Image (cartoon, rainbow, N blue to C red; front, side, top):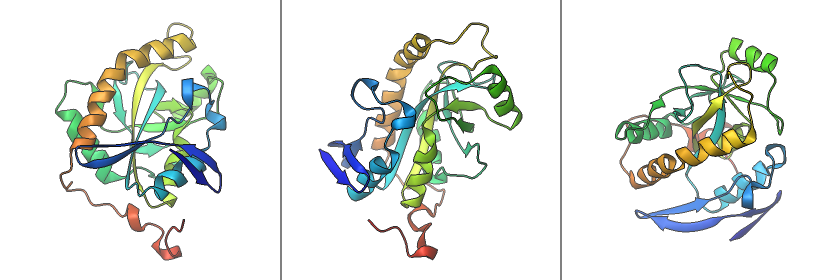
Length: 221
């Protein structure tokens, strides 16, 4: 279904699973044809909000700045490099609970550094990001997570580590390396997403995402 928004059209696939309405957006478009700096984040978030979406589960492919976070590991991010907290604590707890029921290697926390792309980062930039406290580097989680917060929707991100970042990896980084690692982790992510959708239980963690703009009159479509 094509959703018209003030920022352009967003293509959404819609269905239901375990009694929940599910909306899926391919961030990079069909065939991964849209580079990160051209993703229409505002249209995507607006479309999800207009369809009544309450929870967003985002996935990202990332390079690792942290030697403990290896290729194939999942990381439930709790920070972005601007040192705010755009991730919903309730949804993070839900994802962690789902992962604890599997044999997927994962980390409960991680700081995501977002760069504009589409080029990969230099070794000097990676060294700087690590010094600032970054664990992962990618190109899509900002401004997506920030826009979801402004739209008063719960948002969490689970990153798949595909490679060690430049200057950390002993071999040069290639696009094919990223694609191959993603293919290996795809089945695990499918398991996690299905478990996330199926889990309709109430989480103990409270969140104020749905009312975070109340002081300014709330978010209006």
